[in-house]
Length: 157
Image 1 (cartoon, rainbow, N blue to C red):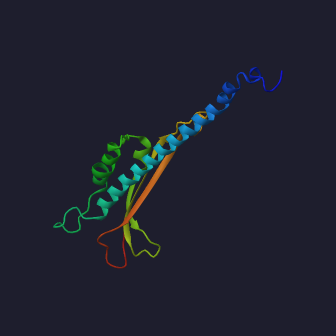
Image 2 (spheres, rainbow, N blue to C red):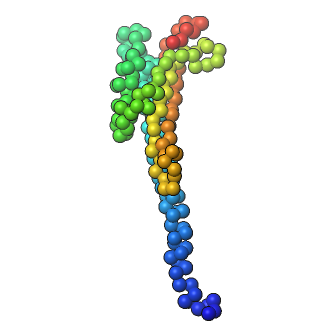
Image 3 (cartoon, rainbow, N blue to C red):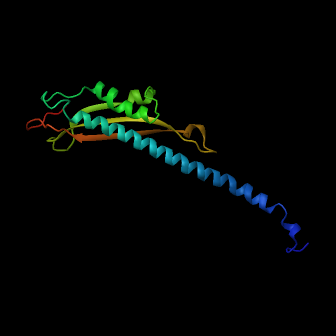
């Protein structure tokens, strides 16, 4: 049989497709999974930013320096933003990792601020991935400077 004979290449297309298709599908799933993970991280950061923004301001212009409580920030600002994106706010990792604290935000201890940090599990959907690597904990931390700074020296928290 000569190489120019079409019969010698019978099945080559199927063989090439069998080699390339799993790689192509893995790449497509990887792009989708990365995009979904990035969207989840951006949603978490936006929710934390909204909570911190409320925490650094006073809750009413005429009330003086009264601020929202940690539980109010969590239940009225952060968790509703997560729920609007379809995330489960009853998740045990989210509940156990949520922190909101007023603290020094520079090394000289002269600027007070608030930070919110929490984690959320992200399910990775890639073929050929071991089960032990199928969940990644995404973590976000957002901090802002307090609107009304305490008198020097700063006593935060």
